[in-house]
Image (cartoon, rainbow, N blue to C red; front, side):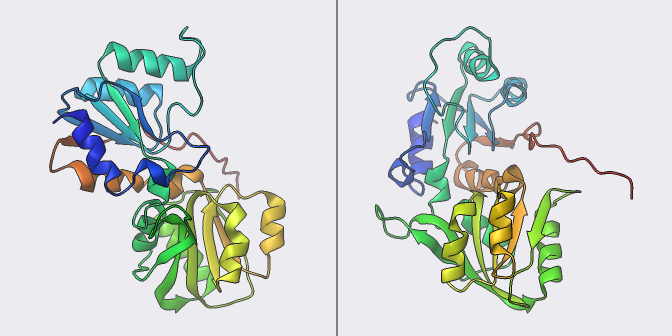
Length: 263
C-alpha cells in the first residue's frame, strides 16, 4: 500500500486541521509515494522503537507523539532525536504522527479512554471552533455510580497503573457518576469539567497547586502521561490492520519510573 493512502485513512478521522496551532502532527520522515507493507504502532518514537521497526521489517512507524516538534538545525548523531531520524532514513522507514489531531477526534484518545472505562454516551468536553464533532477531552456518565475509592480502583485496573503511576484528590461528590476525561496533559481543563458538572476528572501531568485547587471541588485522577495515551495504538491498529501488517511496539513504554519504598 502507498504511504499516502495510509495517511488518508488516518486523516479521514483525524485530519491535520484538528491539530492545535503549536503541534506538528503529520508526516515526519519519508516519501509519500513509498510502498508500505508493515507498520509499527507506538506512542513515542525512540531509538529502541526504531530498532524494533528495523528488526520486524517495518517500512513505517505510526506514533501519537511527534518525533519532530520543532525543526532540526543539524544531523550530527548528537541527540536521540537526530539518531532516530538518521536511522529511519538509512533503513527507508517513514514516520507519521497523529498527536492533537487524534486527541481532537471524538473517538480518539479521550474517547477510547472513556470506552475502556465503560462510558458509552460521551461527548466532546471542549469543542473545537474549527470543526464539528471535534475538540479536546470528553465527558459522559458511568453505567453505574461508584464510590470515589471504587472509581479510582477501577481506573487503576483498566489502565494497569502500577505503584505510584496514579494520584488522586477527593472532590465534593461521592459517589462518582459523571466523568470528564482528557488524555495527556489536560490539567488546564479542570475548571471546564467542574462547570459541566463532572464528579471526577481524569488527565495527566497535574502540578501540586492544581491538585490543591481541585480538592473538595472535583475528584481528580492524575495518571502517568504515557499510560493515559497508550490505547491510541489500538485506534491505529483498527484503522489500518485490514490494509497493512501492523505491530504494537513492545519497546514503547513510559520513560517515567516510580520508586516504591519499603512499607
